[in-house]
Length: 126
View 1 (cartoon, rainbow, N blue to C red):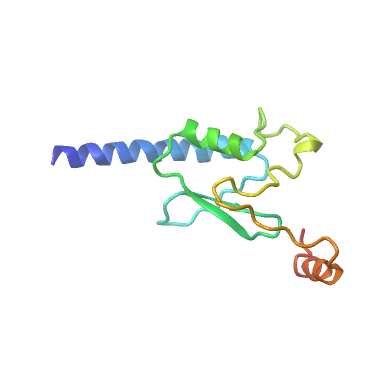
View 2 (tube, helix red, strand yellow):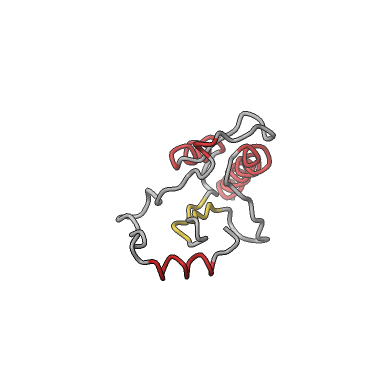
C-alpha cells in the first residue's frame, strides 16, 4: 500500500509540474494555446496552418523543464515576458512538420490553383 501512495505522490508532483507549465510558461509562448478539457490527460496537440492535427504528445509524465525543452526543439518562440512583441521572423513559428512522424507530410502542389482557392475559401479565417 505504501508503494501505491508513493505512486500517487509522484503522479501529483508531475501534474503540479504540468500545472506550473500551464499557468506560468504557456503565456510566454507564441502560437501556443491552452484548451482545458475536464477529465482529459494533458497533451500537446500539434496542428498545421489549416488546423489539421500533426501529432499528439502526452505531457502527464513530463517535468516542466522537459516540456519547455520539447517546445524549444519543436521551434516554438518563447518570449521573456508575456507582453513582449514577437519578432517578425518568428511570427509563423513553428511552421514545420512534426519531428515525431516517420515520414514528413506532403505539401499541396503549388501549381494546383483550384485546390488553393478551395483551401482559401474553406479557411477564410486564416
